[in-house]
Image (cartoon, rainbow, N blue to C red; front, side, top):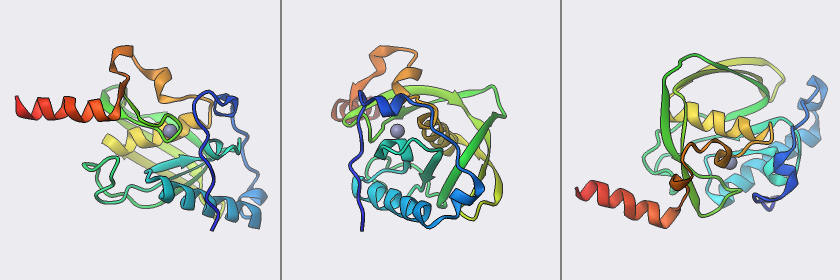
Length: 181
Ligand code: ZN
């Protein structure tokens, strides 16, 4: 079982625009292995999404799966498994929503990021079949966050207020305060 090291903010690979796959590449055995190692790595780190550039592969591929009771995002609803090649994003609503985003490439930190609430993503799945999904709420944010990785962007680039970039353990204290109020 291959588990990769996740590269962190500061590594220039995270700032590159990833290359698309050809249809032939999507169904190749090397790509199958790459997808499997992404799943293994994501599971090892306890994430809900991972993009190929985060393991140093600058290609347009990301995976997403929100497990119930995920440690990093305990309130998030469970999702199906998504393997996403060459995605294209369309905003379906102007309304934006804010979530405290984290990233396995920015360990220990969270930031409040506002993104469109509803999006459409067109992509190719593992069998190189064209797919279209419409996503809302938190899952829409997760998709936008992962897709950003394929275009050299990190959630910290999208912070509107830098003072909302906080350490995870302080955020927990912050949220508990809110609950106590
Ligand atoms: Zn990330």
